[in-house]
Image (cartoon, rainbow, N blue to C red):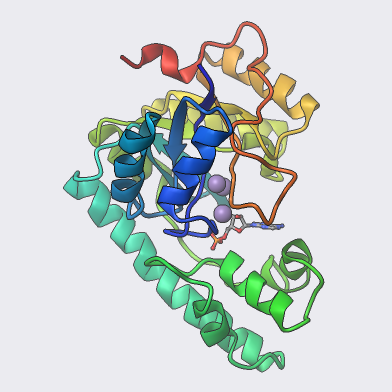
Length: 275
Ligand code: AMP
Ligand code: MN
Ligand code: MN
Ligand code: MN
């Protein structure tokens, strides 16, 4: 079985609709796909319908933004029930913050001489939320940088004109929303955070204490060294290992659905506990 347990659609900052994402996953030979949009489950209904038509298994997921010790960390919820009210209330709160943040990003970019960035970003929004990625796509369109990655570097990260700090979900709350909705909580792309080894160990210890059970070992954004490293953490902390491309769309051709390195040996896959 081929698993890809971390992907995005137009419901957040991906560029394929949930239906097109599922169809492409099928074409790429994925057997089990998780749709894990940022802070929303809006795309799951359409994805589930298409998955049934295409004969592919859909894992209902979400990628939740967390602020932990002043850092932004992403926690995946895999196998969640999107009808869970506590989860939905939590996600709603995060989207309220997102909305304010998007307007504030627009005001700050305006002050640094970029007009109408908020309206420009909205042109790229197809779901219920505005992401920095939408701003980045608009700023590329305006010629402010040559690609999305460069927009982030020049405008959207800490100490740059369009950066807005703030409070996402609390780690303990977010893990409990996921568990309460019947899901497995997984630390997304752990090697991506600019975090010391000591801090990563502390994150894992807190996460486990709150009931988190998984860590993403194989990710589209992990190097071979990252994979081996995170496999060691998974084993040392008895965490289930997950794998996902973090696919956002065909504009980033270096990441494809289902094109994943296998989990390093000795990892206990996150799906081993699923029926
Ligand atoms: P947000 O949740 O709105 O703060 O946006 C975070 C999203 O921006 C991530 O999920 C990535 O898809 C994207 N992103 C973050 N950093 C970068 C980067 N350096 N280059 C390209 N995309 C990025
Ligand atoms: Mn994203
Ligand atoms: Mn992420
Ligand atoms: Mn992601």
